[in-house]
Length: 438
Image (tube, rainbow, N blue to C red; front, side, top):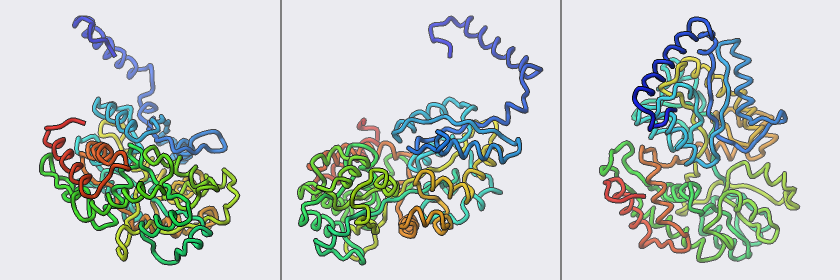
């Protein structure tokens, strides 16, 4: 990119040269047809590498390129690890109208923001049925914006309650029945064990807050799609206050571990893997393979159950994550990109991806596949949790809302049901009105 200090004449000359070189290339230097078949897929780092030493999404790209019989060829570029950094990098490319960005692996919470800005190509009408067929109930919601499907579910994710059978038995907790957060906290307290959660100031904390509110029958945003100051919040409600009470109880009872305010998925996993503190853990399905890799001595003592209820007798709404595949509206080959997505999200490729990464598929039938059932004995629970899961707020302002939640609810030791939901509401409202900055 030319530096801003270059004189106008140089900038114009550069532009003319670029056009001239482009024309020459089109005439004979490069095959335009070959160029138009090239697709670039920006993938999220999923933490899994195949036997060939490649990321599993790269393996899918290679497999689908070969299966296309020359229709397209996919190369991959890896996004940063953190979801917020992924958002920033994609936004820079999309806002610049970069035609070299074709496919994108998008965290579901950012789909609305990208779609509202006009950066996503809507799913072609002819492809909608195939791309959403047999999808778990909750995953198509964040792929839809203002009634229009703007992305295709690739994989979905949810959390379950992992626990030690011996610990639950010692605490007198009947895990054959739905359990509440209060029961789990009390059981950990009584057995001097821990409840692994994610409460660091990052997106994982927003996931926990949202799941608690949704499980209590509430919503952080009660009118999705509203603009600016018209956005209505459900934080300072009975559901929001109960969510704050549960966070407060985890902190006050000391069951969140010695560093609750810095806990994320990995630290919570390590806490659960330690025989000295292992009791309960709220985390994603990758935990099963991760614990096996660590060769924990109590693997046979590990069991799983549905996400705890926030209110006794009211079904929980487990967290929802995953990846939505989107196509850049400025791509030079949108038709090829959608064709590639149909291959990437096929049932067999979702089976292979789940087996390779531990990330759950978006299609329900995958969980009946004998290969999946063998590797994931809790496959039926994962599918049930996905169907019952609750997406984080589907709003173009999610980035601001999540950042504000993390700020006000941190540290968890300072959370109170009387004050925290109200303060979070006030901050978010001020930000949306343009009266406060994050």
